[in-house]
Length: 278
Ligand code: NDP
Image 1 (cartoon, rainbow, N blue to C red):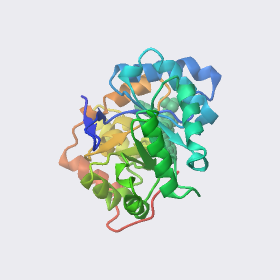
Image 2: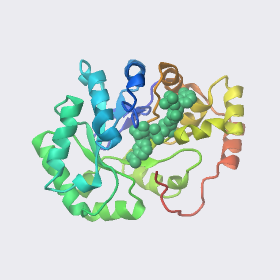
Image 3: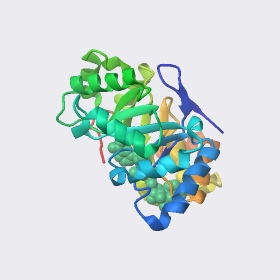
């Protein structure tokens, strides 16, 4: 089942994409990782998330090899390090990402997290890249509600297409304020570490609900995140088997009992909490 999420500019992407942190780091896994990513694309998980930070460019290179002959099938997201998010440095950083990926343009370029460069300057630098045709759109990552409100005050800030945030069953703070705020602006939320980096998959309740649905714990964790409108999940998997399982996550239809048990075990806060970050 394919579910789509729509950006404010009308562009649609699949709600289930693929993360790539740590892919490309271990040469022994390279072939398997490439096959896994390629299989994910075959199965419709065509949004691929990477970053210049990941393996110091190794992740981008691996992604580049996988998409070399299928650029038009994928929606490529990369991220700029905060120290490169200035007028002076962002263009070069983006050029290097494009080179490693072997593409002419990114579909989405994110500020990895807020550092010392003022957001005003970062927005200007993003706009230059859009003007140059190097990126189709830009967004941010790890920005809390206050920072997002500040961003909206900046000229051009309202063009921010997405915010990538830590979001999984064990970390639901964004549901209280940031997610509704983003939904009201048609700004998709990219949920990173949707499987809690694998730790959630050992939780007895998640395993139990998975068994009830003849599903896997990863599918339950992903389906829980994707219950909400405007959420894109980017699980990382380095085996074809895991990718194939993840691709079927949206087949799960939770019943009321499942939802009550999940909400009881993994409570969403009823007040504002500081943003969780990895
Ligand atoms: P995830 O929550 O996606 O968990 C990854 C772990 O889950 C791996 O150990 C993986 O194992 C395992 N796994 C995946 N699928 C299955 C499955 N079907 N069954 C069993 N185990 C499974 O962790 P990440 O932290 O990697 O988050 C996903 C992506 O989000 C990153 O890769 C990155 O692209 C992005 N991210 C962004 C951040 C930011 O600051 N913007 C911060 C952190 C992540 P295996 O690899 O062996 O398949």
